[in-house]
Length: 419
Image (spheres, rainbow, N blue to C red):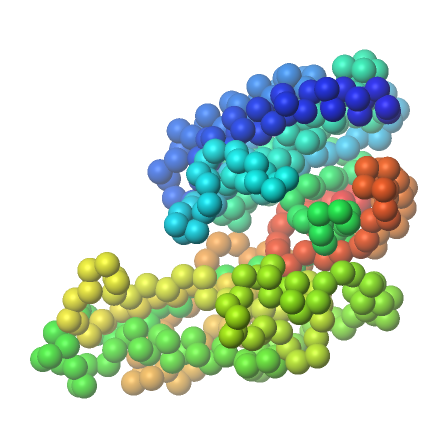
């Protein structure tokens, strides 16, 4: 292992160049304006797989999906097979003025690397392939077999990932799933994620008329769709308590004593959370009273308004708007059922609207269930040993407030393989 680690140290500049090349490609999966870049990114990932020593490297699609890059190394007969997952697509840059450097140029600042996709998730691609290359270059072999998939649709909910897994079920069959797409509690403290929140998102549309009317001619008589929408959304306001949705918390699983003790040992205080979230000095945290922020963000449901559209600030018009829309995003936790939560939100947001406005609700993307696993067994023991060796301290068990919808169904497809 020392020779492999030395090889990585000797080739660190090469790894940085590889990450720089990936970050420079704006592989934005939202919308259809970056399909050429998505293809370019997939080709770059395939080239890195070949460089690392993976074989049977292919760029695959299922139906009209964005590309999946697949590679394998099966030179360890009788050894377990490890399935590596990463994604090469990224979010758009919605607030470019807040970036201190070019999002598409890898930049080092205060010992950290910045660039769109550097952490989520192109850095994981480079790290995984670097580890494979280091072992193959210094030992000529790997202790396990490897199957790796890099997708290009994670940031839009992986709509084609399940069909891809089904189509290639035999080819990708593995004994262990490794996903490098979450975070550590802090830079120097490694974490192993054993829970994810699920995701239920819906589009709420309010309509009050067939067309907008001049606010001077109709204002006061014409019902304002934008105002009606915001009245409905304001029902979700909860101060520092639970969400006021009937029956919403009935299926929320409370923390066990062991889980609560684990949370209490994690680093972090209110000042640290305020800094992490970038709160303004006068703004309070929205956490439920006396609730640890880790529990709030990992094991309690949450609702956010992630988009809203009526008139346009850039080109305002003196009109009473007839239509307004919003995307409501809800993170769910054990043991909430996605379909039940969708129905609860639908009922809550459509009941008794202002001026009897027409309110319609539709799913926004796929419903994603939560995931949780017991971090015991040989795979987790190996992960702990590796992280202890790399960081010089014990790893902690953490949750993730985000959603990775394929983990549970993929584990089932692999006959209960740990992830």
